[in-house]
Image 1 (cartoon, rainbow, N blue to C red):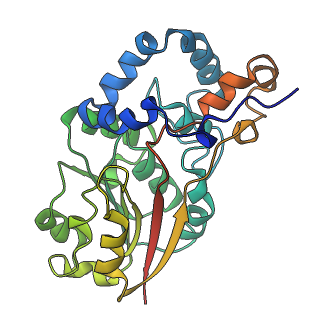
Image 2 (image 1 turned 60 degrees about the vertical axis):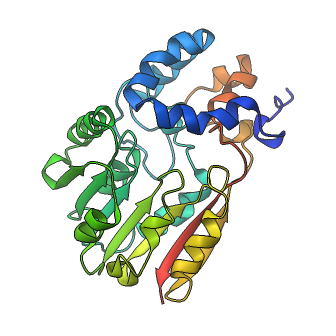
Length: 271
């Protein structure tokens, strides 16, 4: 059998370019309800994956995390942002007093980290009320509700208040370009002692990556992690070997994240 063509290895598609706008305009719950209509051929395929995974992340650092129904398939498969998996595993071996996730989406990161880092205070910022409800449900599904605080949109003021002095604090940021403002050490002094994992979005706001480095490069060691292409080898074979044989191209599509172009994550650790 030959591997299906890998969409991530081709030039950015219109779908990839528009996806960040689609995500910004529609909440996670609305996107989930629209997917069967937007991609009708995927309905049976998604149902088979959901049943096979029993509604929990199938692989990766957050294996076993219970998800809300109709999840983003890379979340369910456990392939989401696989470039970060070694980094996440390493971070989860350390003791953290607090984990802050800015741009919580459906709760994948804050709940996944919460399961891996027992006892840490969990704070998540998310813009929309609909997404915040999904996060709350995900946290409850995973028994994390007693450690969580769910807040609205982050700005420099409320982030600084949540961060405090930043000691023993892990911060994960995915805010579609606002990472520039939220890594400004002059406005948020607690960043000096915090460890950050920041997704940069030059595809949306050119210069984001360099601005974050300019803000924190003098105080933090910077490790850049670039995006990588997805192939059939990324699909978790143990979840459904028969789907890999019968529908390889759909399995390749299932692990795509439909980014608008190459991106980088920055791991920033206090010097």
